[in-house]
Image 1 (cartoon, helix red, strand yellow):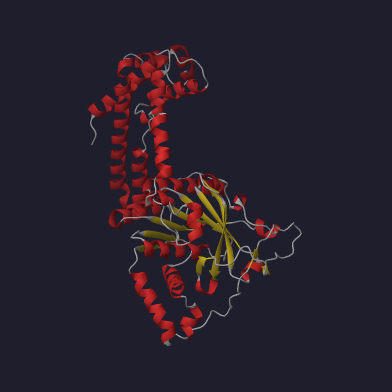
Image 2: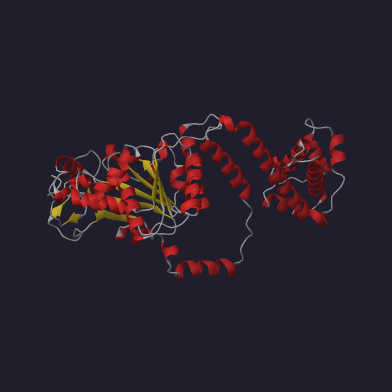
Length: 461
């Protein structure tokens, strides 16, 4: 239990900081406190919080901060005699010590409150929700201010970033050559949005990437599937790796030509460092708590969330629109990628607008929130029209990439094998022309491909 001496020290330091901020003429101490992240909730005494709120309001309005203006600002909310008693001690020379002590007292108090919450309410909480709440408090306490960098420092950092060729800078290979060339692999702390209309293969592509990543590297991958159960995902990975369609396995499972590749795929996949959580009611903070547990026990190199619109919003009691909820989850996912220091692939749904208008999808088609576009480091949009289905072609449109090129990457999608692969067609030939289905809107310019049309019966045994 925190004693009276602790709270007295906290109150003395907050009073001293307020006194200096009101007395100073140039605002240097106030700027330092703001830069350090001092906020109203860091003041234990409610009266101190009122005064700090008044100081910040005056500062933001570019008004003078002095005893007269602060007294006017707090009138009606506290007695002026209390204000005069409060602003008595404080030296400008000691402001950095005041800021440090305030932050330290606040952090200790928050940890103490968290321990009380665990003791008092543990029986009423789901364990994952409890871990998520604890992790949220710790993450907030871990956020510290960063100093500004001078030109010699950040320019050298930029040069090292451009010229370093190690795997960390390149990112983890996705298993698709042209995609890796375009997005430079799956890089740490990046939020990658993979979006498409239903049944276009976004889950299959994510699983293919997980397969390729764990086959080529020693990276541990965590998959959070809110739509499909673990056994469905497992069967899809087996089908993709063995290249035997599900109906062939069920009908001809007694044939050696069918079952042998399946058994080989099973043994290979069992050796992978892949973890799947198929919970259907889970928040971003719960996802982060479970991912961090995996990281602490096994290491972690990649997280996949399938998919964004199915994630449960945080239960904070506020009434938010669906767009606000999705925006909050999008920002939380980006922060999660930073906190875990891993690439995070999050699947998302596209609206029907591109289908209705007979065009390729674009960023504005991301469903329910424009914040997804803002928070993502890379956005991949899958596209396939009717004529492209005939040759199993899917375009992965790199619609956004921070500090990188955008464009289109052609992929082959064998739907009966739930497997994507690099496109081998000749993009410059003219033997096969893809024509979009008729639409009242002008059709996009189409490329021509020279390919052999694959049979649609699932292939030979």
